[in-house]
Length: 74
Image (cartoon, rainbow, N blue to C red; front, side):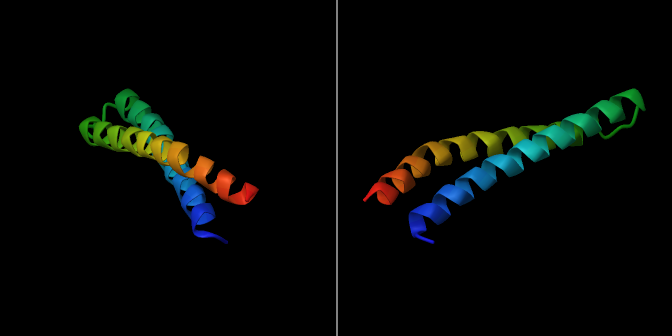
């Protein structure tokens, strides 16, 4: 596997990890809100981290996938 393919795969995995983190933290935050648990602020931080990871993953994907595609065409 070439380095551009590894970079493209890693960028997509960063996005997927951020999406999973954001989604699961959102569900847990909803449960904590309904159950009146005092952990909502901590889950807000996890939500923001997941969103940040998704943005970073999208930017990296926008950079590395076209490079991988161009290298594959050669």
